[in-house]
Length: 215
Image (cartoon, rainbow, N blue to C red):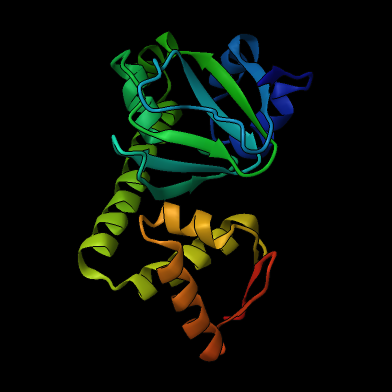
């Protein structure tokens, strides 16, 4: 993590232009641009949440992890978004329940926790932004629950590939089979077998360095 130079107002205009002018002015005055290199941990489970991060460049993966280090992928965060779980923890001055890792160099605007509640009655756009973030991520979490409870692993794998391709805006998925297995709480052998099945169906092409999604 490192502070970077840049014009916060330009990022706000590009990704948060729906914010009131007064809110954008306060964010520009109080916010700090921070760069997180790819694969560097942004937030870890149990870490005290002391800032509100607004993503303005890059992509972040959000995970849940159990006591035995088993991980399950939850969702991606993209420019113009904030992690609802982090917002909830910020509001309660609590500790993170998730792990967040950038899949590429990612720039965020970090803001003081105190502003989360202060801006809710003050700026309608902030209120709706926070509420919409809660709603969007709740729906994403419901999809994860449905996938784990009701879907076969091949369906979960295919959905994971689609989400990854959509987030990176590329049909090439560079995650290794071991990494995919970890994020789906499965085994490398199962993922490898299912990828082979999908390849036979003409839905993917698998090679040593990447997976090409054909759909």
